[in-house]
Length: 159
Image 1 (cartoon, rainbow, N blue to C red):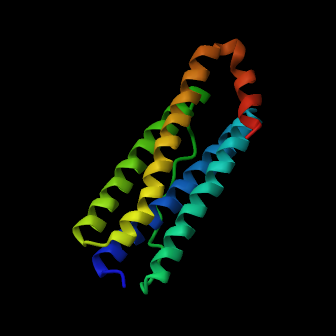
Image 2: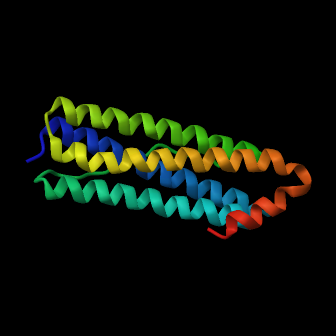
C-alpha cells in the first residue's frame, strides 16, 4: 500500500507532467506556425512522452492501492520566441522537472517506501537524458546560427 503523503506527491507530479505535455504541444503548434516543422515534430514527441509519464505514474499509484488523479492544470504560454529561446525554455523546464522528481524520491525515502524509490529512479535516469538532449539542441542551434537553423530543423524532424 502507498501512503497518503506519497500518493498526494505523485498525484502532484501527474498534474505537472500533464502541464508539461500541454506546454510541449503549445510549443509544437507555435513552431509549426513559424515554419519549423521538424522542431514542431520533436516537440510533439515530447508531448506524447509527458503523457506517457503521467500515465505510468497513475498506473503505479493504482497498482499500489492508491487513487490517481489529475488536478487543475494552469494555462500554458502560447508565444515562445526564436527557436533558440524555445529550446532554452525546454532545457530550463527539464531541469525543473528533474528537481521535482528528486523531491519525489526524497518523499518516498522519508516514507520508507523502497518500491516507490525503485520505480522513481527510472524517472531520475530519464531526466539525465532529457537535460542532456535539450542542452545538446541548444548548443546545436547556437552553432548552426541563422544559416544553419533549417539543418537543425530537419535533424529534429528525424526523431
